[in-house]
Image (cartoon, rainbow, N blue to C red; front, side, top):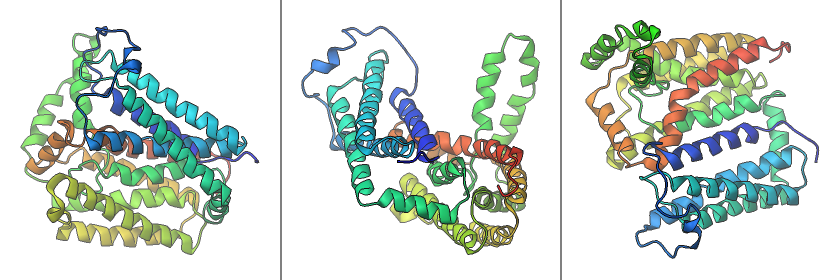
Length: 373
């Protein structure tokens, strides 16, 4: 098979990194194990287990196996060889995580988890083999060529990750990038006692003022919702073929954003409150965002990249001002105390990092020489 640039490559790297984070979180209390580090390989069935643990360990590695297989296949390797390598890589990653969990007091290494992870990887690879055997991967490549320009793998990876980031609670709907309040205390602690300690002066006052703020101004809240929807659309416009397909991408982004935010609300407050986020302000923001994105779909790719940089910068600045209201704090506490621990690492980091990854990507697109990009 000919070698192609595939969005499965960056997605497989990101998914691997998120598995590492979720497997080793909270990265605290490292100590020497009381038994041999490979002892878990010969242990019997664990005394304490749940059906959820078994299913999540199996299903959690299925996307990884599929992504590994597609990435290897699109790089030009034969399907059979890609399948074996993908299963081996997934199993090796799981073994590495179980081995390292020996050194974490809050984690328990398990040969059952290793077996389920390996089986999940194999199932994902099997799905990839079936799709490839029926021409599904080739048809996807042809569809992609009709919808997107060449060298669009990075942008497509960002678009896939955007709704995942929305699954983690946000202070304002579509307001990704709410990381400043978490980073400041960590930086202040790291810089304490160094010549750069003065840089942190005033951070505590800023955090206190933010916590005491009751709510954002209506204009700021509306702007966050609008920018939060327009920004991924502009990323899409930098790689999408001009024409009606861009309008379809606006509708798709809106549907994905609404679906992810609704699911996040349902996870946090129960299915009966799934649409509690659809306030009049949120609905206005969606309508304005859709209209703005539809107008911007007419601009060239480079212009879209420029508008995207402006939108993401404004979004990050506005989100940093969002107060930590009681409902938002309750959502974060539920996620961080383990209620959604298996989603915590993935959705949290994607939600925090996505706007900054988008800014980096758009800067790279603008720096390219191809004026159609």
